[in-house]
Picture (cartoon, rainbow, N blue to C red):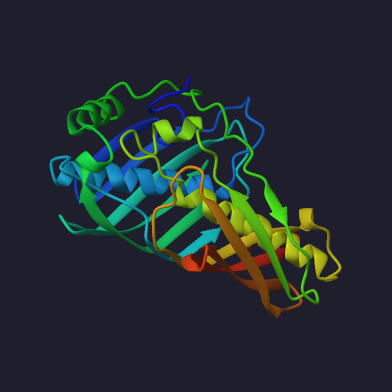
Length: 280
């Protein structure tokens, strides 16, 4: 199913919610899709936090991603698994949201968010408030139909040359149209920040694999993403330039800095830690 609550919505049901304080929810990763990147697990927690925050302000405003202090990745999500989601909000006011959260599978931690902060902007810029209220009521009641997510289109990176094995650049072309814009957002199409983070992760893994560290790309798995900053919206059709650089190479970890620009304007950055052989 495409369209709203199908193309880029990762909460099937809200099982408990105290608006502006906390919430618990679930999302079943469809078994039939090819992959479900870890960045989308972070997205599911962010969406659950957004539902609680939007309910707290009467659906007049909605949060957008801006900063994340730390994302800890404990395991790789797999199609067919069911995510148990929980979030705690430290702030949910008309101007900003602050929260953290944990995603688990069968009681095992999969991904934790810490110190996430974002501004709250007028809902009418992004969606119809009444429609959002109705979607919230659905999620708090019977829930959305599980398995509706059909996967994401490939957003390929065009890699440049490695600079002495220490730096790698790539370009990302945001599509002019894609199903996920139906959810993100109906009135203002924007590239989801988590898809930009996923592109940065792929670039970091490619650089680490190309830097003769002795491990293939499939053995380099992200364990931490920190100091995440998303500075602006990225509209459909935009060309984004990405860069990754090696900062530290240890026996079990590789640390890289990543950044994104549109033209000369910095739009995002993060620090990525890759674990050797398994997410730590």
